[in-house]
Image: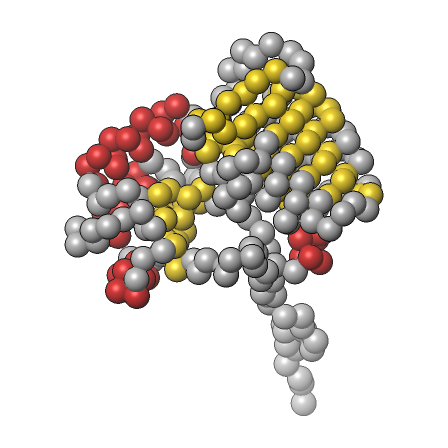
Length: 253
């Protein structure tokens, strides 16, 4: 009697794993439900930096809206995809809006409680996500006061470093494609390339300091500036970036 060979292995690994992680998402704050004006102003914004916005994940912030009657999530989704943006979810609003958004394919992003920013992300997960899937260079990190981080090795392309509850200090240069995030200030004792986002929990007093500024994007408390390739016209030398009357200011040190 012959036996049939099975193509399936006797022992198999699980096909997937669910993990927590930390990503930077662009937040589009809706001030009203005028879709025509949204399309017009969004088009102008995207034309200023098309490569940066291409396929960028977007979260809609409904916190500033006072009238919801004309809010059409399906039409908003089509508008975002028209400009090659990727609608991900919403935050703010009420239960009815949450239901309508979910029907249109949006996730509902629940804001963390005050004083507990990103508590769903474990420290071990953050350390793991700093490294890329192809390269895993070790970050030389010195101990500081609670909440601040000091990194003494270069930050490579694809790496993400986050200082939760304090300042991020990089005693080296930052490569293009890297990302720095801090609830407080960001200090780079070298050339700042890639992205740097300070005050990500809304701290408008946060600042960014660097020896040389060659970044792709800088942001303080959600106010950002995009630098297109070959668009840097800033004189060389140390810089500080801060907010003044809601505007992002770049000033020599």
